[in-house]
Length: 327
Image (cartoon, rainbow, N blue to C red; front, side, top):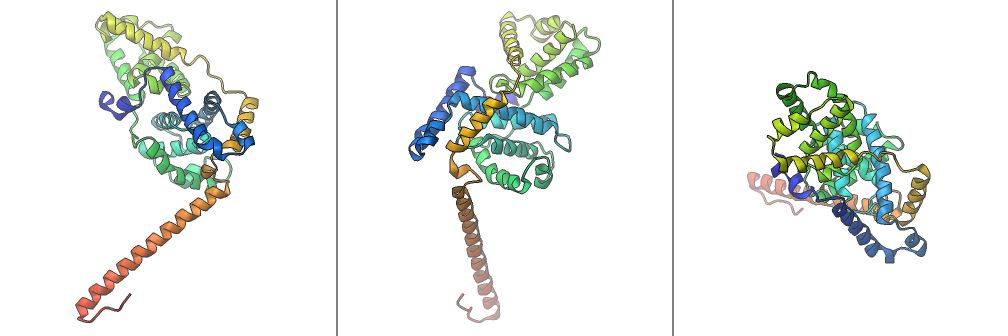
């Protein structure tokens, strides 16, 4: 389960400062590698780590909207999985190397597969505005790269199962008469938490409990006795840590507005100037690289076919007792 998972071992971090240091390092790595390759205008357009964070926040809202309007309706586990992938990817990669609008849809599509939400690529891109054939190509070309950057750690532990466990326990071991009325408030907080770094800092059970206590507070219900005595058995050391985690989780949702369109428009304009053309589907460099990959695949397929044909000819010749033709 979660304590022994790759998520716990590799994708949980101490605090926001540690996450920020990773993002700054990813930004610096791109700048150091590509700055000398760019012309002066592109160099001046390069984004800072803070500007990248602002742009990613905008695309997180775009991802949330895509998932909410998706047809057929998308399960919560798929949405949570997609956000985990997106946040993990950009801990170690710059938006100047991989554009968020392309990684976003790839994350959602991969999450659909992992969580067994069975939609074809055609059904998937039908939910995307614009050139759907191009979108399908982008997703297929980015999927392996995404999995590699995630170190193939694809199983995500979301807070939804712990929420159900807590609600059952509250029904049995608390004085709350109707725990089901907490669901609206729980969903409200979890939706907001998609747009924070909570999944990289807190366990699914901590997030689940924070959402339940948030909803209880909104409904003017008191679960203090349940948490302190029933859940934690009166252990003051565990209580202090839990209260602090719950407080931080709930407070992380207070700033929940997307960046202004004017700011994003400026960042997008600069990004188009300084992004890595090798990963830009509209660039000639990218198209030539894709064409080379297709040619390589065709050559490998031709070689395999020739090898199989030769082997089949040799087998038939042996059966007929004649010398095989030189192929």
